[in-house]
Length: 196
Image (cartoon, rainbow, N blue to C red; front, side, top):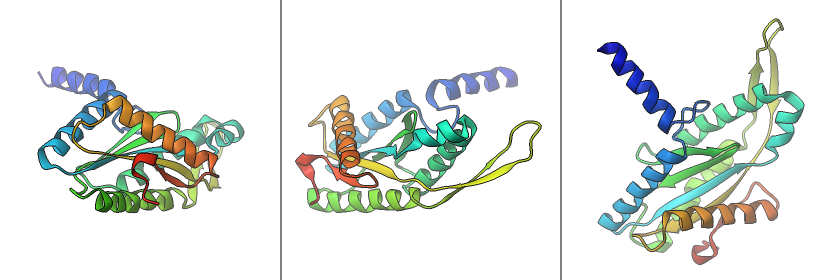
């Protein structure tokens, strides 16, 4: 019975969590966003979705290998989790992209925008701190690498079910690409609720 329970938990882990970072995967992200939207309907509070993309991640993978890239993604996941409340969600969307869902910000859109901006700025600053990566390869001495990088963040507010889940994610993704085009290491809100 215990072995069966353990096997069921392993299947659940593989179905809903990213194996590298242990963060929710896209499937669980969609469920959490659905829950956040339902909470928004119930409370009348805005929520926010943040699309976080690491700036210049590919060169690290190309120059130092996937081991260094994986270590950076694991540390990024840990830093993102430290920037949010327990009721919020950080998910690995794929590659070097993460999605943060912030629920129950405020009833007022201006106050919600301000709070979302403060959280996004906390994330931006947290991710821009130096990373110390200890790379261990079989048969070789461990090497330590200090790496600096930043993140581009796109943010969209939502309330009730005024937009679909797909639309919310697309708008956050588009805002993130605007941040990249504007020079990276920037936060951009969706035009329909920009905080200025």
